[in-house]
Length: 256
Image 1 (cartoon, helix red, strand yellow):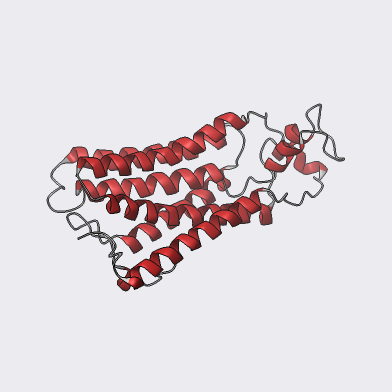
Image 2 (tube, rainbow, N blue to C red; image 1 turned 90 degrees about the vertical axis):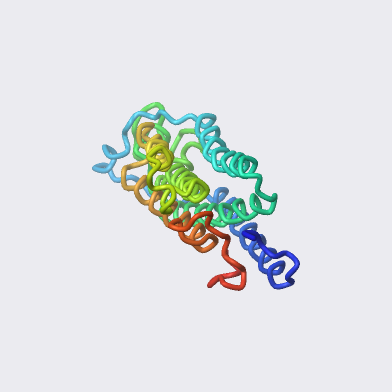
């Protein structure tokens, strides 16, 4: 079979420890969200770098996060139903994805607090009525968000979710296995998902909410965690119907 052997006490303990690990990282990530990064005074010659027009809309970003999370979950459920997989197969996939998301969320929020890098539109957030060099007069929430430019949260989440999804779909469709290489449409699906991930990650750049290097850093973090947790849980994409890796075979059983 391609699922966890929950009858094994070792496998059960491994899964529970993994869930605890994910829950802990998500809680830490939420905690870092409520920590305000340190705001240092802007030098007069630096104002020009943070004077882009403010285009940020909280509702649109919140919806974007939900959409990014909705896509892989929908793909998992639809694929499992289409292939008539056991419900534990969906659990395996969500377990792998949640590991990548928990590590990504923790790293992003932690680095945002530590780095406290300003967004390109920070001046309009801090001084809505005009640039100044004294204490901010803008909305405290927007000012705090303006200190979380590096690395980009949207870029990391979109790359992590959608790149993981592309690997998952490629496995189920046998895109890179010998039997699927002759079907070009399958490769197009893989490319389209990753192309969508790149376009989504660029949205904060177009809204003046992140610099290019912030997008790149967030994308690399998401790419690394997605690949790490996918290939530590599943075998090679070159095989047909890749199997879930047994808990006894894992190098880091508590994490993955």
